Length: 168
Image 1 (cartoon, rainbow, N blue to C red):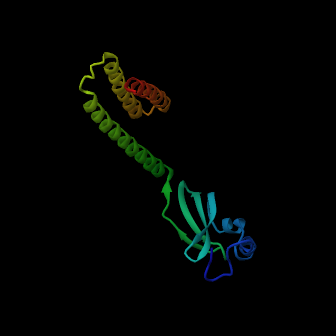
Image 2 (spheres, rainbow, N blue to C red):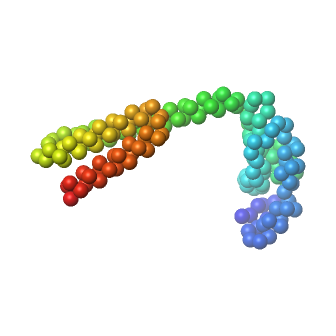
Image 3 (cartoon, rainbow, N blue to C red):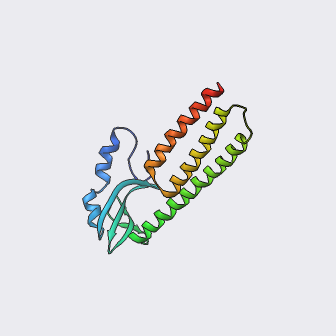
């Protein structure tokens, strides 16, 4: 780790030099208006900064503070709690849609593969049970039931193992 305008280098002297060249977190927080939710020391380009997540007036902002002198270098446009929750909900919905699409594609491939009878009624019944479990898994994911999802995954693994044993 090397910084151009300082004597900070790697090894044991790093923490000693940081004590001399970096203001305390308390001093950094003093330059922020609002409640500090999170703060950490980070390298940014050629020097160290404090990066803080701050809550003030129902808005969360990110503040970057020069760790050498406590100057506020940058404040992002704030986001309200509602905006953040809406973004999280949207990401979760997209993630769920992607999971459902993957399961749908998997079901189609498996149904095509298993559509022809094996000549073994027990094996065909297990194949059908496997596809039914995939549909149950899809429904559980769509409904967001994490406990049920885990149960169905265990059941799917059991059926898969039985299929492997029958083929073996």
